[in-house]
Image (tube, rainbow, N blue to C red; front, side, top):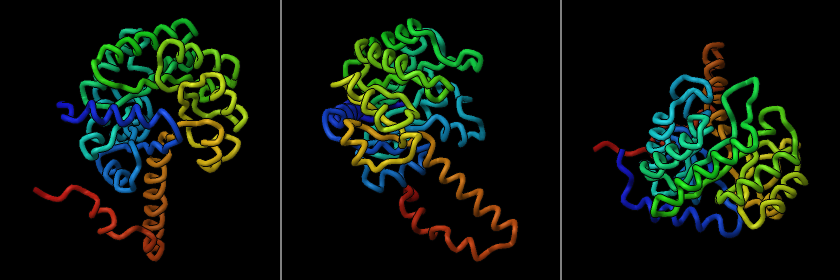
Length: 277
């Protein structure tokens, strides 16, 4: 795949978004959703590992590095916005795997990516601290060797994998920040006070928050006031789309055709897509 000619300029714009304020980062799952979301005027887009996998009829985590980056590149091709990719665990346990993933993302023209500390082993889902840190060091080194800006977001997945250990979560995020990660991310934090503690611990590095916290969704203004720099949604928008298809499909099969009147008009969606030729 060929990176767009303005890849470096898009990456510079993405870096600038992380310097102040708080911005929404919608997660698209394919080229069409990218066009729809871009039409709403966000400052940037991201991919979603779950949504990308569902477009292949697979479960989250079932894509290869090449497939995930191709999906993110397809999103990138449909917009002039910066795009960051959800690249899961870096597609391998070794630091070299994470470095290779960062380089592949940059070659596709992406403005950034996320790397998690997950293992893909249900019995031990989180890398040990030293292994996780070595992986981030390798990813950072790869990003710094690109010769152009690239926002590396380092994630710790404790709260998504039944390990609600705030002390370890903060320890990991601080270490990732000191290793040179550009943005820090701990999905599924339980409440606003925990978010504030994470933001304070890694300051002045920017923090991404997954819509939430788990105690209840909050207005973006409250997250911004807590110091959050970036709010993403993971697979939520893809779930909304697939959920609507399930709901309307059930109505159709049940014969409740009037319910389908709630579906947006053909032109509302088709008009945002690339015309023929």
